[in-house]
Image (cartoon, rainbow, N blue to C red; front, side, top):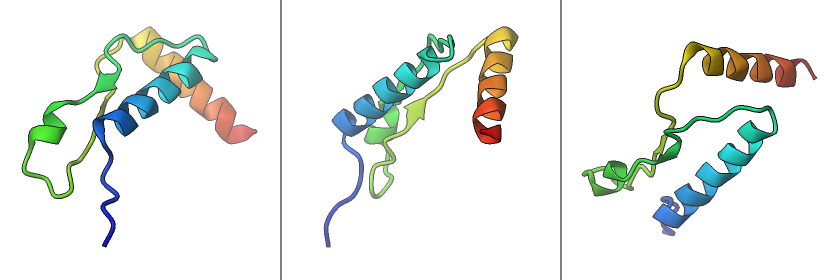
Length: 73
């Protein structure tokens, strides 16, 4: 059976794709990155998580507005 778990490279590409999409809306999540501990855990397969990090309320509201706008289109 093929292994479909994400590699660190896959997750890095995903982070860059998300960063680029957010930038199109003028949104920056400074802590956006690959959650490296998710690769070191005992998860089978490795989780390969994206760390969205913390953001201020202005950024959170901008993100919510962009998602609402996209959902309405």
